[in-house]
Length: 189
Image 1 (cartoon, helix red, strand yellow):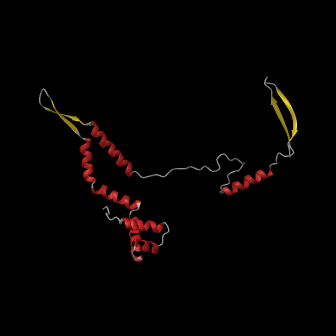
Image 2 (cartoon, helix red, strand yellow):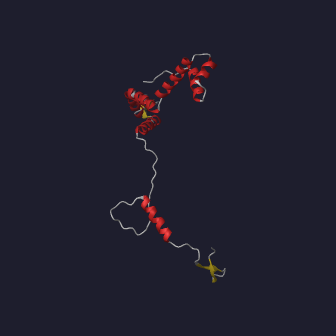
Image 3 (cartoon, rainbow, N blue to C red):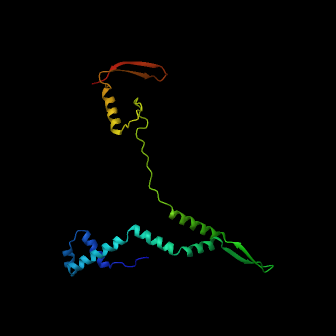
């Protein structure tokens, strides 16, 4: 059943002015009414809004569809079998020919109904944690959590020496394809 009540525009205006920070006393003084009238206006709008949730609207639409289900079904059945009748100019007899445009439109409507009743699925996101991480761990049957993995990575990194104080050898390629040794250079500290 569709609810037909809609709060008056003055109540909606008072509701919005209150939500924008104007106090009930200020609204009452500005409109020349009592504070009770302003509170009543705000309450009417809040009730209206609470009854107009998406869930309730979907419930109303479902009720309409259920109530008119037989009529819609009959209309679709007639549309799916629609025909055009012609009279043969030579013999004068009636010839029925399928009306393909109406039949295709009816089939399209059936598909739209099917889309509406299909369950909605939210967006999918896949998170792969630990893919490609190798550290020589052997499966022990016990759980290794993300914190344990991070501790192990930090420990491995801490044990690795830094580049400072190491010798680096660079090779320079010449344009004729021969390699030239640039010599050993000390990394700057």
